[in-house]
Each structure stands twice: as C-alpha cells, then as structure tokens.
Image (cartoon, rainbow, N blue to C red; front, side, top):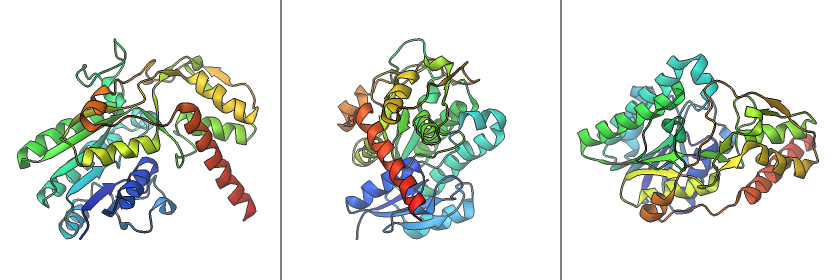
Length: 312
C-alpha cells in the first residue's frame, strides 16, 4: 500500500502542483477542497477527492479517519489581502478556524506531520532585508495576522498530540494555473491585461519589491519537507525584483501598452525579500527556475488555454 497524504486546497493553484508531484512519486493522495477558488479541471485524475469546507468538522473528521493519512499538506486558505481588509471575519474563519480543524482532526486520526502553507505576510513591513525565519513577526494586514495565528495554533496543537509540523512561509508564488481575475497576482494580472489589449495597473508606481518563486519549485519544497525534520522555512528565490521589472518582462513578450502608474493599495508592503538559506541547509531545497524562464512558461501556458477556448 502506498503512503497516504491529504492535501487541502489540492484543486487550487499551488495545491494542484503539490498533488501532481506526490502522485508522480507514488503516493496515494486525497484532496479536500470546497472549489470556492480551486477548479475541478485542476484535479489529478489519480487523486481521491472530497468536496468540503475545511471548517466542516464532521466531514473533515470522517475523511481523516477513513483515509488515515501519514502526512497532511495544508494549503486551503483565504489568500487575498484586499478581501481580508474588507471581510476580516471571513478571513479569520477560514485561515484560523479552518487550520485548527485540519490540525486537530489530522493528528487525532494518526497523522504524523502537517506541512502548512504560510506566507511572507506574517513578517509585515520588515526593517532589514532579506528576512530570516527568526525575524520579528508583525503583520500589517488581517491576512498576515490570520496566517500568524494559524502558525501559533499549529504549534500548540502539534505539541498537544506530540506530533511534528513544518511551516513553509511562501513568498510571491507564480506560474501555470494561477487564477486570473480579481485579486490575482501581478503576473497573471499583467498577462491578462496584455491579452485583452488593455493597460495594466502598476500600484506603488511599480517600485514595490517582491520575491518571486515559481510554483513547481514551491511544490518541490512541500515534497522535500515530507521526509525531513520539521521546522519553519522561508520558500523564496531570495532575490528582490521591482514590480515594474516584471511588467517589462511580460510587456516584451506581447509588445503591449505602457501601464497605469498608481499609488500603493492599503495593506500592501513596500519591499519583501526572504532569506531561504535555511531551506537549503535543512531541506536541501533551492529554486531552480529563473523569473525570466518561469514567466515565459506561464505566458505560453495561458496562451495555450486561450487558444483552446477559441477553438471550441
């Protein structure tokens, strides 16, 4: 019998890549996803699937008891900073209460480890860059607060059951399968604006700095954390890139229009670069895909989807 892994949010952008990698390596995978953001077409056909809200204690408990996973990768979340500002109650309910439910029921059913997708947002606006895992956590948005609280609950619950956990603090993840539309990341937002022959919005006048990491590199981090000692790890490229540079990379592919330069939005951090050296030392993980290569693959993927839609 193969090793069993539950992956919450496995029909979503990052989660679906994590599912594919575990299945590729011979694991039996069960996905829990309510499809509020994830898509059925993202699901690997070899994965078991339970459509459920991670706050649904009864369903989560039965799923964990029946499947009996060795490890749980918890990626299901409310991921929008702007949505957390307008509806902090919903953000906290999903990210905090949902994480408590997953952790309690996973460990209760015998899971030995939970690998949790946290965020660079827990650091807030750091004084020094790059940020290490030992730096102060001072989130500046409800989303960052909820991710920090989820980390704290995971530590408490794992200690209660005497089990292990890993927390992966992800920087700006991009790549094939990323959601296009409201609250999408800058890469899909820029691609979509060019394919629609429009003008992209460059908030912060394009001068905000982010640390972009390719989604398949992130999936490898989850897979490598499975067999390594638990801990807290930054998962990032370790390189800061101004948003306007990302815009120019994509613009060159499309020969598109210039952007609308706008002031920063509330709750957004000016600069964020994570130090991922601990992940290399402990997990033997490092990113493989450059920003230029990753963006090209992402654009090709998106244009392939658009072509398929137009051919129907």
